[in-house]
Length: 143
Image (cartoon, rainbow, N blue to C red; front, side, top):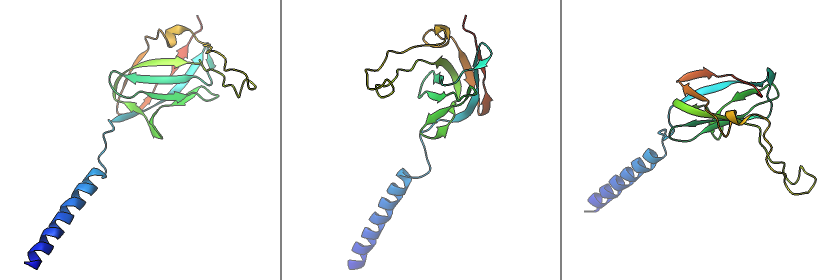
């Protein structure tokens, strides 16, 4: 009788361990991603400090901020690089509000956009992201 009870407890603990390790294993709900990077220029000059956003038809967007050379490398979430596979609408903006700290303790200033709306609020830019590396450059013009 005692051995049946011990065997049942061991079996229950074994099943519980399977459930626990199954829930925290390698499986992820993250979609397949493609690496996306490139350069953004405005009138032939590198565009530094621009926010580049790739938004899929469904799911989480990916974004990056261009460096001083106008280069970007999309992040999906946290430090995971890339963008969901498929078609994305793209928005590129330089609108950033100055924080009160940057404004010398005064109120934050309103957003200021330095590039035409056709690249952000009225953007028709779109790209197809494939598995692997995707080099996508944007040559913007101010007219």
